Image (cartoon, rainbow, N blue to C red; front, side):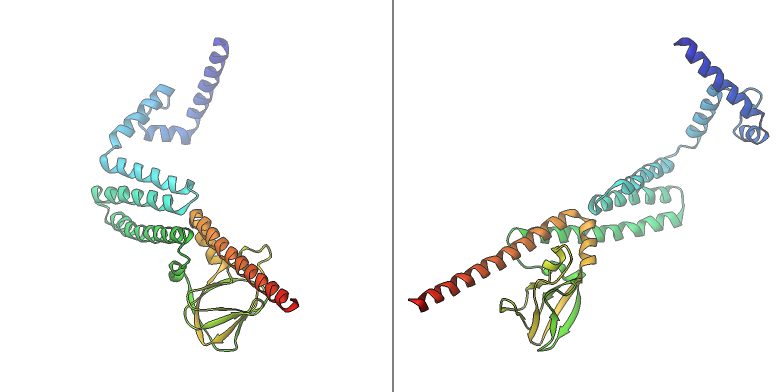
Length: 268
């Protein structure tokens, strides 16, 4: 075992001797303050340690900590902890810029700090409102900041059964009719969310405008973007859409029961 260690040590020494014979490496060693004719691993380690201790300052230490948080953001999969780590890193980098009198670095990270704070607040607010929706509040107005406005006139068809589905809609004003089940939809209702969940993204019904109205739309791509920013939002959205699906099933069951009762009465 000792013989093997000695062999490895001798191999490393030969590699080091060969490297010092190279003029470029010798020049680098001279710049580092080392003698190319008398180079050992201990000498290299001690010189690097000396350089590190000589250059370590509070500003550089803060920059190193900030760099650590920046690397951490690259390893995170969800947006909320990423924003938090980014904000902490910005604080350390801004402190580094202030202590080192680097105005551009100080201003850059000072500007990034409130931007990250605003985006973090928006995401936390979105998740909180989604949680309330999942717990029973069926309002989905918390999605409005991410939606765009669209207007329809009476007689317009928003989409038909089997059409490709690319967006979800939230009614603001007017009235809309689900033709297959003859159900009228008023303001504050969600439409087209089930197409987001179907495997082939197809419409599950035909919606017609029966009274001039306004809707807000959000594309499925945008919903996926919000989901990947924070999977917790995706969970609450699925709970919300599942509740709506169960409501539709319950309504259809009641209609079917009423039709059967009416048929039985006619026969009797």
